[in-house]
Length: 444
Image (cartoon, rainbow, N blue to C red; front, side, top):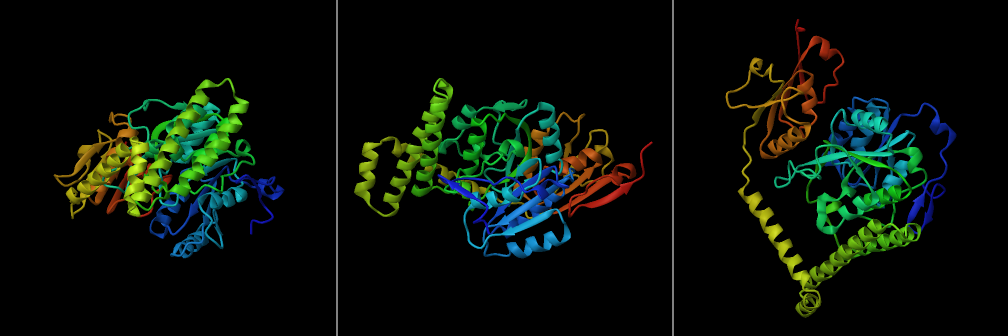
C-alpha cells in the first residue's frame, strides 16, 4: 500500500507533499502509534490518548502485522470513536516503517508520538500545546516516569538533573545523552510533539530497528528545530523486558553506527566550526563501537568460544568491566524481584487537597497524599510516588476535587478508583474509564 507513496534515500524516507483534502477540517494534533503484538496494553494506551482534555485530535494506529488480538481490539475501538484511524500492514516491517505510514496519513498541525504500551496524563497534550505556543518552539516533550517494573518504577529520565525548570535541548545535548550506557537516560526516549511544518518531509530511518527516535530528533535539530523539555512527567513509560528498546545485538548496533557515521559526515561538513557538536559526535561513536565489541564478546561467550572471548578481552580490557557490570545488574534485578513480595490486598490511597483531606472517609491505614497547589507536592514528586506505590500492590484510589482528578492521571493503574466531585466541577470533568464518580452538592 506504500509503494507509490514513498521514496527511499539511503534508508531515510521522505514523504510526498500533503494531499489537499488532508487540510480540510484537520485536527490540531495527530497522535501516531505503532503496534506489534501489544494486545495486553494496547487498549489502555489508546484510551489514554482518546481521553485527553484536548479533544481536537486524531489517533493513527499502525498495526505492524500483529499475530495476537491487536487488530480485533483496534477495530472495536475505532468503531466507537471516529478519531481513531487504523492502518494494518501486511508484513512486519519494524516500528520506523509503521510510524512512517502513520506520518503519511497525519493531518494535524502537530505530531505527537505515543508508544502502544505506554500511558499519558489526560491533560498532557493540552499542557504541551500551551507551553509550546507560549515558548514558540518547534518540538516539545516532557519528562517521563517509569512504571511496570518493580525495580524501575518511579524513576524519571531526568532524575534530579536540572529538573526544576524547562530546558532547551540542543543537538549536542541530544547526542551526548545517547550512549548505550545511558540506557533510559537518553533523550532519544522522549516522546515529543513536533510541528508538522517543521517535520516536513523528514521521516524515520527504516533501516533502524532501534534508535530510530533519536535519529529523527537529531535530524530535526540539525535542520534548525528548537526543542523544549518540560520537567512535569506526564508521559508514563512502561518498563518491561519485552520492550524493543532493551534489546541489542551485533546487527542492531552496526545499523546504529552506520546511521551515526552518515549523520556525522553530513554535519561535520555543514558545521566544521562547531566543536561542541564535533566532540559530541566523537563521544557517541566511541560508545557505539564499545557496545559493538561487547556484543561480539557476548556472542562468543554464548557460543562457548572461550579462546575468542579471551582474545577480545585481552585486546579490549574494558570489556571485562562491561561484562562484570552487566552480570552485577542482572543479579541485582533478580534479587530485587525475589525480595519483592507484592501485598495481596489493595492499599487505599487518598488524593485530596490539604483542606479536604480530613473530610474523606478512608481506612485508618490509608495512605494520605495531599495534592494541589497548597500541598507543597510537585507533580514530579507525585508521579514518582504513585508509580512506585502502584508497583508494590494493587491500589484503591479515593480522589477528591479537581486536584484529585488531575492526580489520577499520574496513576498507572488501580484496583478501584472513586472520584468525589462537586456538581459544578462534575459537569465539565473528563472522568477516566473505570472510575466511579460520586457527585456532591456544591460548596458555598
